[in-house]
Length: 310
Image (tube, rainbow, N blue to C red; front, side, top):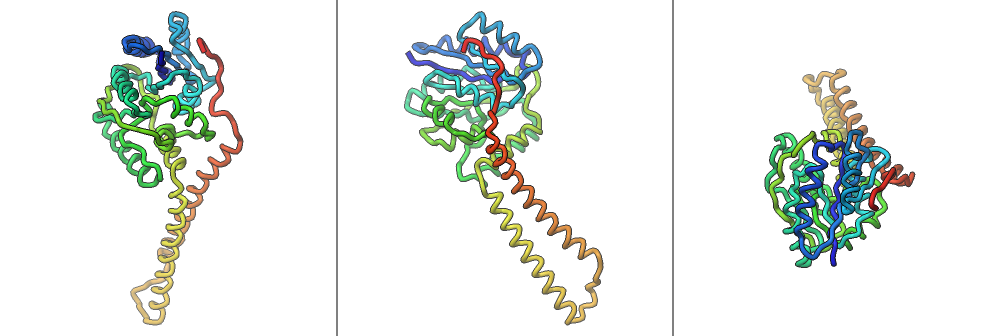
């Protein structure tokens, strides 16, 4: 009998733990000829999330818990879940129920038809601000413009993937993982599943603007070296502009163009322009160097404190 594994990262979700469990259980129990497991990764929650999960694990052995020693982030939580799955088909879904568990059986049918990755594509996103919608669109447009690997727009981590795809992801050693990009990078047969994303059932989002910016940075820097090439382009443009300014200054001197008044304005403009280009170049290169340093330390991406039913 085949098995479905569902990975659910949680951080401070005491208000929706039970509802998430019941909705997923209702869906998974109705899928015939499949066993199932729910691997819940507690990402260092400081509320009663872990206590409630332990209670559920005692009542239902399908619930398996991985609890971190502290908060390591959403991508680390999903990565840990991928290491412990035992199923043939693996679903990644957030606990806030914005991605409806009820569509899992339909995604499973697409998997049975020979597709290796069925990624959720949002045709409508309810309950999200215009700012978040615009920044998400800008992010994917920028990412695909810079990256050598095309990453589908309007997608998140919600997807159903084949076991062999998960095995490939688990072999990748990098620390700052951008999973939706890595799933695209590994290839295999991939198709979208369109659905309407719902409003959050309860609680507040655990992905504030700061974390969204970090995720965007990980995505761009992990899948593109074009920002480094951009530094070279900026350098060439700077040289051309400085050469034009030099020619203009020489012509003004010999042609007696009196309207050109020497002063600190032009000097400051030139100095600040080139200083800005240099600082921008240093910042871009430092981001790549920081990631090289992070990888060279070879620290684990997460630390597991306790497990239950594993």
